[in-house]
Amino acid sequence: METFSYAVQITADPDGGFVVTSRDLPEVVTQGDTRAQAIAEAEGALQAAIEMRMLDGMPIPPASAQEPGETWAAVPIATAMKAALYLTMREQGLGRTDLAQSLGVDDDEARRILIAVDQGQIPALETALHCLGKRPELRVA
Image 1 (spheres, rainbow, N blue to C red):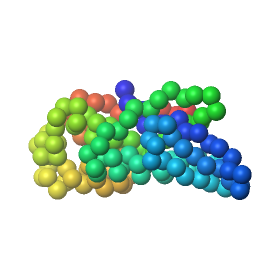
Image 2 (cartoon, rainbow, N blue to C red; image 1 turned 180 degrees about the vertical axis):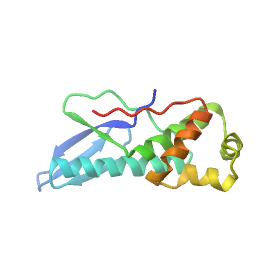
Image 3 (tube, one colour; image 1 turned 135 degrees about the vertical axis):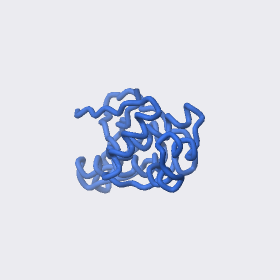
Image 4 (cartoon, helix red, strand yellow; image 1 turned 60 degrees about the vertical axis):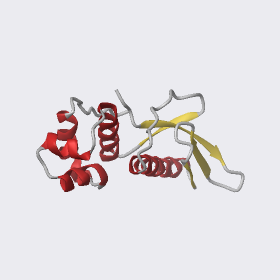
């Protein structure tokens, strides 16, 4: 099972506010004026990092266990589902054309499912994951 909530370190900045980093995705470095804003910014930075990794054909690391002093930050549901689809396709050696054939759609529609970030895509992403033998699951923590 893949999870797309990552442990992040929130450190008070001597100049004010908080800096956020991630062990799993070192490109994630952001900040906020408050802890709550820092976590919200971290979630956006995690989303951007995962989307860039998918566009560049790079691996998406699994989330490490939370260590003392860390907190969880999660990506939006549509991004988590896209990442799960991306990882499943990589695991099964499938490309966009293979996905299009599995779904019975044209290549452009498969590209939109994989690239566009739109919460309205959740049903299409769920169908795509089902076609590849996966079941998305939502957990609220």
